[in-house]
Length: 81
Length: 377
Image 1 (spheres, rainbow over the protein chains, first blue to last red):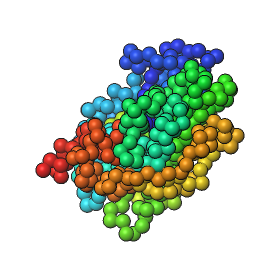
Image 2: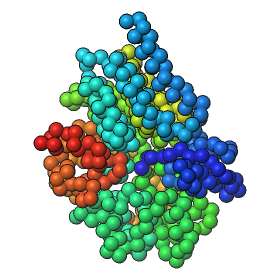
Image 3: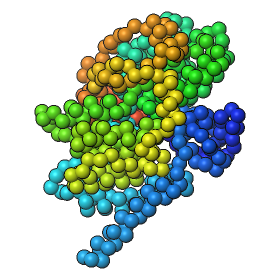
Image 4: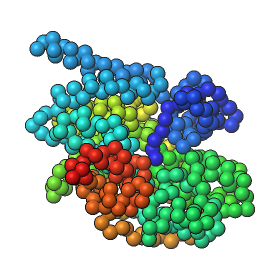
């Protein structure tokens, strides 16, 4: 029930607080009643027809970088072994 | 960046698994409770239990709103649909949940009740607009993730003067349930305790990771807010293992791409306007928990289906032998239940944990039943 999926904003209707979002080619209209300052191109977290949050690309990159650092530390372990 | 594929990379999973094997101390066990059913499903669907050492165990929590809803509330909804001539709108998850006497909304619908499955509260409002002369009730359920969309609909109905629309509110709150689980966990009599908690993903986008700080502090419990993708779960498990090894108990946030410490203030303000906290609410398996659920606030009393239709408080009659309650407390696993996979299957569920796509029994059935020695024999 708490499942929510990231989708990209392709069009906005600011007066109606609605956005058209796209995910894997599927387009859907969602409500923006719960978030402010959305722009076309943003990725939003969609749940039961509402956008809950905007995704931060910077933070996503940082998390992925954490996974990749593990590799670096493992390589160092091997080197020192 | 698509925010999905990147967090399902097999290559990265191998690295994370290696790090967990390296850092987990073979001389002890790590029992990590994933609060949410979404995590339980990620663990099973992607086979994460097999990627971590045997001494790292995932314990399934109560984070499945459909599973913890007491049967009496399902009975109330069935009664509404059958005896009050309403159009009952509900999320699909609830359709097959058994009420008393093996009744369900799906069976009531088959018998002629006007029950409609909706994807969104926006669809329920559209039905109310299209049927002004009928009473339209939205059966609201879910944690803090799903409560703000209900709040928006209630405000919208008032703004439009949709007087035929009302809401049967069953929204529940996660921090009180986590506090209950950890309080029980702290009792010395418990055989195997929980060493760390994978905290809610999307609930936390609304209430913020800060909402779990009192729990972590009060019970000296490491908590890591974890995303629902498989790599999120593995990274969060690693972060928990590091906290446990270091003897720390902080709330850490792995899911920083959507979760902040303060959460979604706009959604919180809407919830505060439309809802009030119930003094106590019954959770299946956990009992009556104080301040653990939302009711519609007095200022919106006219939209409250419980008042409009004078719904009675009823206790459902649970199916004998169904272990849902102890599975929800993390004390039993689905394979411990005599009904699991025999008389209870997703096609013919006896308990809610088998119905919901987030239920632990449904996860075991879909992905894990062949790896359970008990059921393989």
